Image 1 (tube, rainbow, N blue to C red):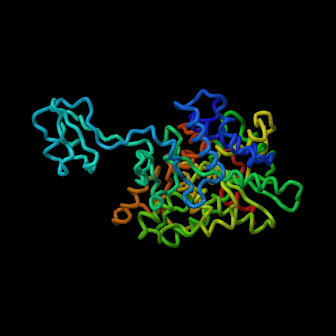
Image 2: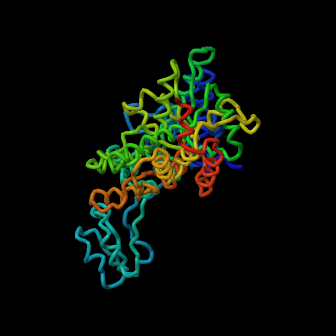
Image 3: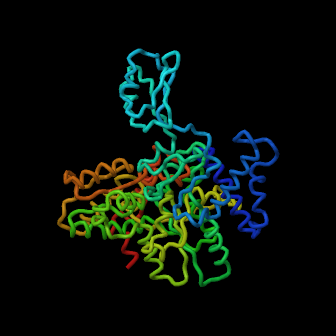
Length: 473
């Protein structure tokens, strides 16, 4: 069974694996320049026209695998040299232009951007075009088409534009680090920084020191990943890497559900705080609504805080599908509790860098959370959990949730709230379509992932949220 959806993901994984392998052996610095040649040996290119360009791009990928540009606070970066195969984009005249006499496109253009050749075929001067789209609307043959790059189409917050050298440029003031552009780019020219070296340093430092423990907090969406193995084998594999304990982030979700239900009943209206990309979207685009953001930490941060409050000399690594989590841990209110974030892609690279074949391992046990904590991984799960928490705590509150599946639905709900037309009293915001199971750091993305999460939830021994969190008292 394939481990990844695309060859771009597989290429990214190979770089991460090789960087990790060299880091374990303490040979990274001396072999740094050789990694591109290891991945693309010989003189025959495997992906592009020139093997030397391939290796130059791989060298940039190595830098990102080692943490990327430290001067850029964004966890998403563009590899400029890899971003040159897409068309410039914008409005272009297609072969459907019939050279008609009406010239409506010319008449409607206020910027003089449209001219005609000797065959009366229209042409658009890119230096004059303001991309208003009026010419496209009036063309009787629909011959003028707006071409957008995949990254621009994927970015629903309009944080991506084109630079002078035709490369994608990310506006950090708009970007919410959701990673939609990372998964959408067919050339892998946009990617998230990796902190896999930080994780390896922690794991190496903990060896032989019984007073120093490293906890892995795994997102509930792990149930829909690593489909070539069993979940219990993945858990054993994480232990084999050197982690002391594996804890479910879903237990943190149970904690958040109880607390968020109380806050909601007290205040009457909230927007969820579990998805860092959604929170960032509100902060950057709806500052007047930040007052409604739940004051609860995310499930990741909530359970991490609990562990650090009760365990001395420990480090915590979150493993999940989310690139925005890498940005979340840079926040002052989260930084003390989570030491590093890895995606499922990076976990796979870490396994293979140590030559751990998880399919050969015995099944470990992961059972810390309730059904409701586990279904946080998919859209609608958070609202269901809050409804259950309201009921279990006997709160006199009628929940009217609005579960937003993807940032576009989030935008609609927030606009309605701003205009005073929203009928709901709780907005569950998920920046990725499908919820966390649609995160950019997933190994696979698919319709079956929701069913896998629900199945995983139903396997929980604790059937109520209250029972799940009782172990923490």
